Image (cartoon, rainbow, N blue to C red; front, side):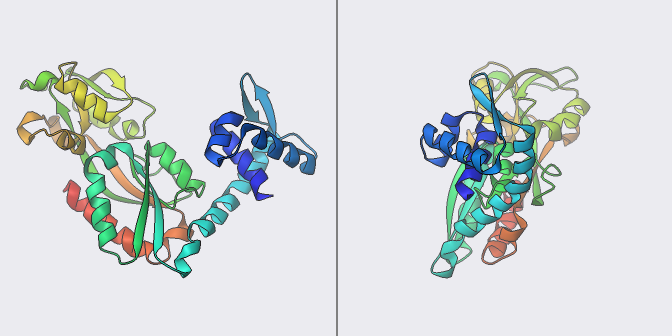
Length: 285
């Protein structure tokens, strides 16, 4: 019955049978058939239509809460099945702003430090990485801004990344109380971790965009001052004298490594994570 529960889990995450079928690599009709078979077996409805999408019924939600941790454990077993017979492949989800700046180099160094480890890397926003690690789709995650929010997972905060302001058009500015900036949207994982520092620095959020890389380009092209992680500013080729550090230097976002406890407690994953943590701290020192 595992395929029935996987279909229910995918529907909860995606809200449509088409999207659920895409991530399960099966047809939309196959998803519907699996749900119908599950409901027939259980004797009650687990989903209900909501416009063009679906939602779990209260009974379906209660079932999934009990089943989801077991699905994660089963996926862990399948992801690590090849460890007995050959090299270990670690499936990682990495925050997009980390992977596109300093993260790729850090991952290479950590991989090369451990014999027999291969990496299967995927990039998403940090909340999506957390969700997929929790579901067992990924073994590990390297995320920004999620410290303290994934209490069901093993979370190790390894560093803090400083936020800097890229002046609009790269013209030198003096930051003052009320300086307006473009920064990340409120629903992003980074925002809750930096909002207090933004207030303390006296910055005013004028606009929000979904991508730090896009914010950096907007600032360079004179669309407004951009508040971004230091690594993003470095990745677009800016020198230290071309960015501004907000007053008090208190705007930082936490960088964390996450994983299911059953995954990170075994070798060579444990050793890989030790190197990943050390290289992350060095990169952001």
